[in-house]
Amino acid sequence: MEITALDPPMHRAMELAWESFRAGSLGIGAVITADGATVSTGRNRLAESDPGDDPLAGTSLAHAEINALAKLPWGGHPDGVELWTTLQPCLQCLGAIRLSTVTEVNVLAPDPLFRGVERARHLNPYIGSRWPDFRQRDVDEWAVLSLLLQTHVAAFWQVAVPGWNEVLPQIGALAAALVADGELLDLAAADADVVEVAGALWGRLGEGVAEVAALADADG
Image 1 (cartoon, rainbow, N blue to C red):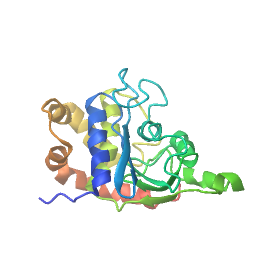
Image 2: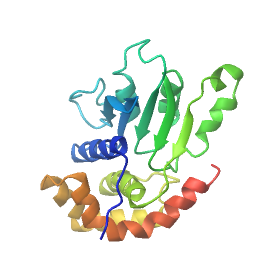
Image 3: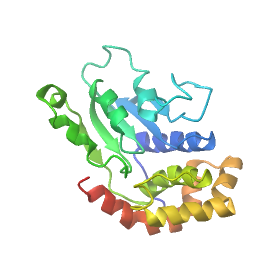
Image 4: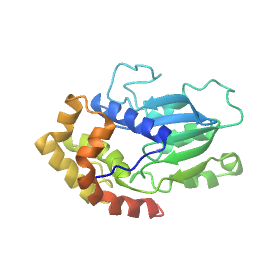
């Protein structure tokens, strides 16, 4: 079974997402590059008290994109930087991105809760100026794995997220099965890397590709 390769920055973002999941947070990672070189990284640390090498932990601000953006110096990289994230930015992160020097945003997986949020660019001319280009990567098993991490967290803690499982029933079912048999947590405990995790689940991840592709194509 051949695992699709990710661009190096997105691969690193998925490594960070897996680190986030293993630490008990939401499983989202972000990387910022300039001229092809990584200049900062960040991961979701909502459920953690130790910020590690990220500025924020344990607060509602501790999102992957904000942790990555907070490492950029004010006024630095005036020619712009590129953001790579494993999940479509939420409203909070979108505001931080717009006020940064990010010129391009590469998204691995769409977020069921924030489809259409980029239409904020049309609120007024100032907000719309210097708006970054958003690029949704073609949906494959990696996008499903990205969404599975957050879905597993919600299933494990039995937290209902209205509007999530309704559009991702296959991923919801897979998350429930993995919570029941403990396989994903076993992989985390065994110190498996994200490629090993993808390899262990790849055939089952394929079952969710169609619904994620439909979500990515939907005009939220």
